[in-house]
Image 1 (cartoon, rainbow, N blue to C red):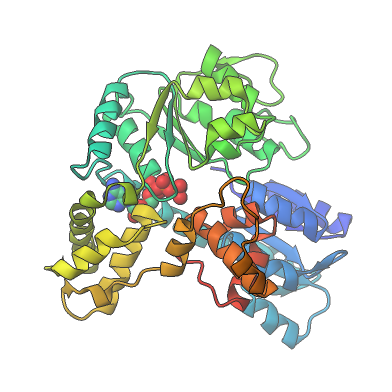
Image 2 (image 1 turned 120 degrees about the horizontal axis):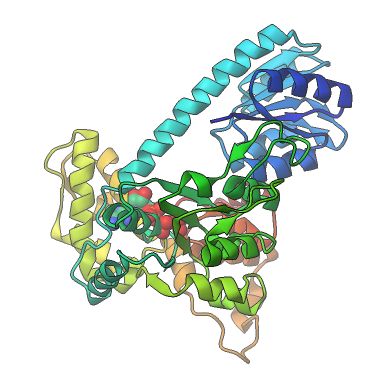
Length: 459
Ligand SMILES: Nc1ncnc2c1ncn2[C@@H]1O[C@H](COP(=O)(O)OP(=O)(O)OP(=O)(O)O)[C@@H](O)[C@H]1O
């Protein structure tokens, strides 16, 4: 697969030289000349590596680095600068840059570093893929509750169909696990499963990822690229967070579903493709349709076979069984035989409200196992995020009641802010990026606020 590099520099001549050099070495290059552009491309383009000039017109690497780390700490950043001081270099490394190189840079030296960083990046991504492949082994239907039994029955009924499936459920309920299960156990199980998370991708990158492009389709399209739809031919495409798909791209996806045809960017003829779509979202898509954030025609096309994953708090009777299954896995992964729960620990697990669902359950158990010296976990060993859970369960105001009850009038502005952030974070199951989007602030600002208010982002 072609590796991607984001080159950030305000001097056009430097960008031109670097682009030429990297493209000649087989990399795909995108350019940014300001912090603002760099931020957008980093979020929407997900490069494998960033080459960042220290001083830009609207800011410095010192400001951008923490934001980039917060968005995706696995992407290495190499900082270049003409104004070197030891203090700046130390500062930049502390802020998360992998390396610091003085300008003008020797291209052979730069290439050695870039190659090494791309290799490390590839290993990190393989490790992430390994974690993802473990999802396949999880059983999405553990439990005897009515909700989960009904889900399994419906899921088995839709297995053989070629129609799209829409999986809805709160964050961490196992939508990804169910999508893998549907692919592996369905008639396309021997074919490819291709996954794309639509959240935060800029429309043009989402389009090239899905549909691919011809050489010369746009300035940076130096070679032709196969889209994920082609890669998934005779298999399944899993589009996670489909509720975040840009409105511009939605009709093109609809065309693929209705006509089984699509066109690479810059191509004049359609290609035919045979894929099954599994889409997932934590949002209420019907509501998004009403507020014109999601197209009605696409909604109706993908929601023919809806599957809803129940929240953990809706099926407390399943929690002990799932917890023991997770403990058995942790036993094997951590080499800690005989892990179990006391009856009190089991009762605490059942009583908690689990805003982060199965993901949170796994985290709570893993933390307890790592911190406890005995295999039998007691309720004192389990650490819950009660503030978040309380915020989630706080009942929303009835229509017509004052927005600010009298008791809240005594709160300081900071306390109101803290409570609001807690509620939004809880509603998003502790997912900082989504909470930041809902609050209308950058993710990095939310991290700063969490730190200054002494709040935890972990679920
Ligand atoms: N059936 C299961 N058994 C045990 N653990 C599970 C199960 N399903 C999910 N998990 C745990 O929850 C985590 C999240 O699962 P998954 O990514 O499928 O959820 P999701 O609903 O897609 O989350 P999000 O909405 O945040 O993308 C997994 O990494 C795993 O640790």
